[in-house]
Length: 489
Ligand SMILES: [Cu+2]
Image (cartoon, rainbow, N blue to C red; front, side, top):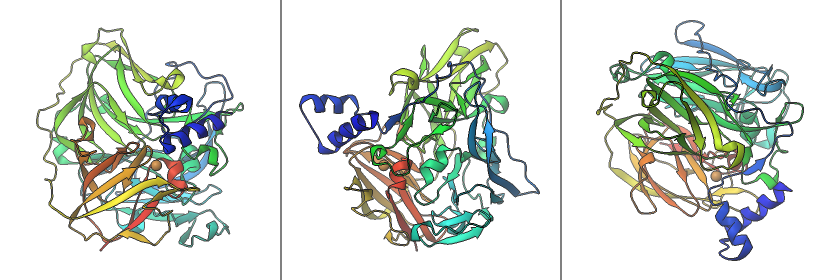
């Protein structure tokens, strides 16, 4: 029933229906980027579960980590259990603390029943460790052919090598398997990787327990507590799958006690399809200090932040602005009902605060001069989501930029498409021919391209030659072929 409604509205958006009942439905859904899947159990009460913070991964030896992807049963909705597929058996997976200039090797062992490919999102990574969708770690005894995509099968384990020659930034890692990224990330295959460096160390930003990575995603639950998800590639969910329960670090609408001091919140939208417009209630401001790919040159204040799947916002919130005892709720104004809440902070006590947000934060790389302009049009076809009219074909590059150069890439769209480029970081130059939004600041790897919008970015191809990709980070769109290769030559 819900699927049919969504499909009609979806076709209305794409058809550009301008009048009548369908037109009104379209207007009401203009900001929606997926189809709602509802839970079959009573929704948990908001702001009762304490905010979990993912454990930090411990190296087996300096620069070497091992993590096993495995199923585990965890309590997400109080009183029931959910099977997750987790890195380390947890959801989110462990947080990898990386340092610029200190290479890391992460051995991923696959004890699931399905192949996986791990992508470090935002990483400047050699192509053989970038999580190409057909470069798969397969379970012991796996005999599947993966639909004839070919590619590489690593039995049971693969070493991913990360040189970490990049600026401090909030990165994350997640599964990237061909055709099945959406259901496998939905089951829990995602975690944080934080890169730190001396430039960041020199800043008096809040740290320790006053620095919180916050992975925001939505899920739906079956009556037995299992994650609910449609059949793979269900055309009724072609828009994308949205759940009715908002999780932060794997907990439903959690609550965190904080002191009345500045806190650094590393916001990540790890949802398959849902966009959020975050605000603080009863009021307050986010001071943005970093974007996807690192610290901004100077802080930017926002009353609200729209965050699309894959994007990160590194912000500071000063809880001394609220009386002790206050409840400060992170809300999502793009949703009505349960998904309108995200989590709550309770300002529990006063405390000394030596932190500050300096007016100069960092010296990001300056704006390079582009040597070429290319267009990438993100659009639905009858049966798939396409880029420049083509469904994804592994090994067929749509662009061949030269290492060490920069290019203007122009993204156009028919729907909400959060466009993610592997390897290359970019600056947003323009939206619809106008200045970028305040929330487009800084070097990024994912940009929120909205329906019938044209977004120009200036991308730098630094790091490594080889095969990379760009794709829509709405994971259902990605699985329904909205990806393309590019070769850095
Ligand atoms: Cu898309």
